[in-house]
Image (cartoon, rainbow, N blue to C red; front, side):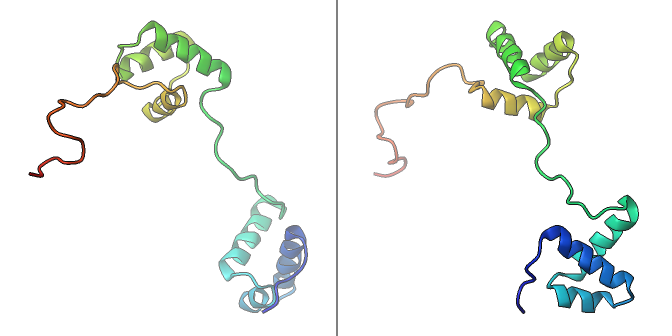
Length: 135
């Protein structure tokens, strides 16, 4: 079936109007090239909000703004050996914001901070890397 060439808003309005005129939902969905669940969602939105405007989508805002990240980085530099739980408690005490573990880990990652304190090096020079267990 050929796609319907109108704006998304106009498509919603025409489809909902057709159902309100008494046409069957399955027929309207087929006519406009949409699924019945999509049509149901538009009808529910029309009933509950009174509008068919597109809903805002996207990811939630980050828990920490750039300013707060700078404050967190200063805290990390002041107490580099503190545990995650200690950092969470100190952060809540200092700023009044309660961060989840996941948010704090994402912030650590964004700052390039890790719990590892020294650079990795091979355990010994006797076995070349990648040949473990081979003779």
